[in-house]
Image 1 (tube, rainbow, N blue to C red):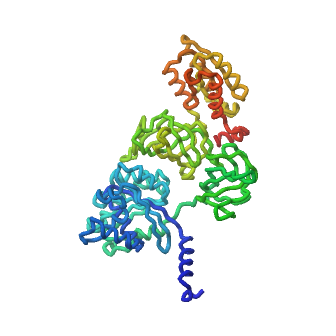
Image 2: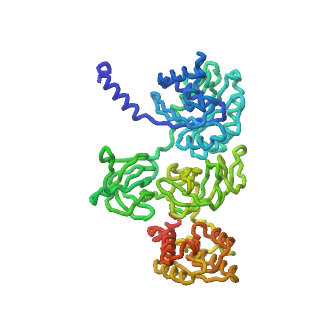
Image 3: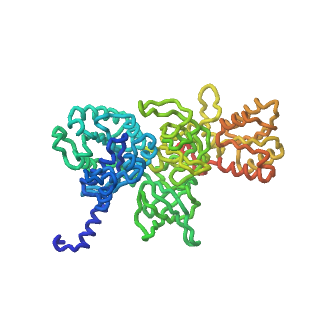
Length: 580
């Protein structure tokens, strides 16, 4: 088509088509207070001519700019009134712009330590971390904190924008010293690509246009680096993970599983495995509001119609049969704690991962990270803005990949059971199911029969059920559980033999049994001892809440169902070790 003959409509459609196929770079900015993050982003948008006229007019009319002086570029991004009054960034500000080469999403995050959780939130989806460093101050504790969080969140690339070089007369030696120190820090944190650029956000040096005041610098400008930095491997190239949010059943003729593709690509005819059941299925069709699709990929939300009507519900997952995720009840994770109420081992929480929610707890805290030194320190709890490593145990299985492999299925949040408040965010590092914790272990040489082998043989996890002085109820429960296939054993104790009886209970638990312990008046210390051994698999059947035997039996049977291991993983012990 002759360009001179194109109509305005043709030009507009061509523009949309070109813009649609541009790469998208998500990057986050972070640094200490007054390092110039908001000014840098404002200058970037202004010099690249991507600020709307009404935005610029609003900035010029603001109380701060009424004197008619130079434009305060930080006002373009600091949108909250409190931010403008205090001159700091408080919340995460998202900005969107594009150039001829790429589209960009900017997360302008807070620099103050008390808003560290906001910074972690803004950086969670970024491909590049921009760390602002004030050239007059050098590397500060917040520089280390934000760099550590960026590496923890799996951001592969980091750009150190060394700002305010104009205040040091653009001296090369000042930039070289700071850049060298930061490169050593970034290498220690494991970043794949590190770039340092000397800039002056206030004057625009090396932001969009190359600075004539720094002829000694031969590297890219800030914008040039944004346009050329390699992007991370797209989620479409990863193994298929489809998290089910809702099962649609308008009538007897249709059953669809609606959800989001966390990673990978799905096409009609693809074979998938359903978790936790382990049943195999095949994709019949991919349905959206706009009609049927021949292909769907991450992060699209679609409805899948399957060839066979298997039992699926919210929280289940469809996965690639050749690359399944880990299925586990225990894992180790790095945690960024975001709430004033500290993370305490043993406390019950709601763990939300992908589309699944289960009750769980932090079994232990491995360490807390000292952000100033990056050293690990012992800790009994994690307080607000703390970062540390913890071991978690859940009542039901989670389906996950290590966070380094898959950000979506490898991340989770911790929710308060009573208030529904988000307390913290975690990044899963490893599966701990092959190291089942909390059970007494035999002394001497390592046994060839592991706890996992016993659980596999039994088909369920062990538990301790305290029935108090109710011998008839204990007998009924033992019979009901035995009929349902549980390896169950009842023990009756007295106040005098509590210590040896408790030892037998723990030994049977270690052997994989569901143990019914009936004795009068167990004390708080004894209960606490059982909780320490069994965790969420300890059930205290108090007399007050279970006066009616039928009600008590129903409660125990419901609890026992949560102990079962999905049947698909019992067919092969080796597969179970990988999956559970």
